[in-house]
Image (cartoon, rainbow, N blue to C red):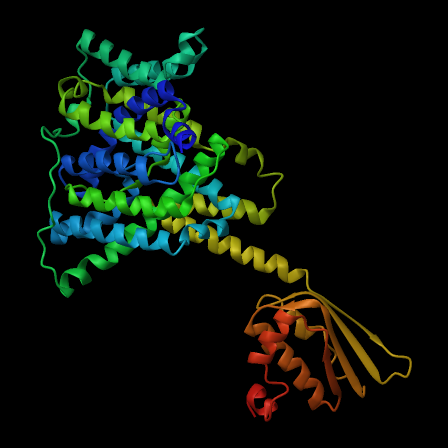
Length: 495
């Protein structure tokens, strides 16, 4: 118990606290921006980010991962807020949490094993592009001071770690934010700051229950939004969890993470916040800055609220150019540059899945659409590939009256047509033996193909014997097959 507590919370105190402060600074403008996207007051995003980060630190399944209000979730809220208002958004946030807890209870986090590496790579690359694109409004129609500050910030981020001793002790993104703010204030530069993003809250969040009618009409309004938010939130959280697992060479409990996200969203809804999920950009900032345990996530949430309430006079002076530099660093670090080099080496199907995932996510700004498209494509390519591994050989006995067909491989919807085409139904033989010792039947399409082959041979006057079915294949054939049942020809051939 003590060892687990130390490993999860106190094994990296200095690194976690410093990383949490950096993440808190980066969360402020993003929480405000995502609130604006959703059409709500900036306080809604800030309160949500504080609550979700603090709660997930205790109940999440991935130590060191940052969860808060996100752009992917905010995009799904726009219509609900516009048509029904903030109170319905808070109700939808609570229902989103319930769905996510249910998903964790049903162990749906295990579905991540169906997401191929090419889909994850496409997701990561698309997110890197979206993070970079999100910074472009801060770099267009601005004075040269902004470009200078951004360039200087990037130089600090990448060169400060090279400084002996101190370069490893203090996260370079934190040095970038502090130094660029000092320069901006000292020179009195007229550039966009965090204060220009929106008004910061001046009081602690308070418990509140959404002021909506508790009836079926309300449920019908918020249900589709809550389902969408729950799915997108879990997809982004599971993807981010996978990426942080790789970065830290550790493992996480995905089903616990599903429940944790749900509990955190319920907490956010009860404190006047919007639904959120894991943030890949901030999670990478956390890991790159030295954060590893739950303490870094808790620090990010607590410092976010402290800075907003106590240090607001200083926060509003942080130049957006400094935060843009940090996010560009995140974008560059997030993108899998190796995937570009691997385009020549990897199979064409793998490259297509990765590229299509990127295109769909960037085009729709919806991570769920991209991931689902990638998973669907990967599944189709896999089914096609496995289908090619099925083969049928045959031999005629010495007397010339019995033909034995030996089936090797997987018979299912993708290979069923090839299975049927492998038989010569017009050959004049007295008996046909279909040997399935090295084959496996997976679905009713495969069973239907076997039925059709047997009945066609019988229609041509041959006696057919099916041998070698393994136990699993025999079960599905016995249950759904019709070739040994009365009137089989009429049932299958439609006569």
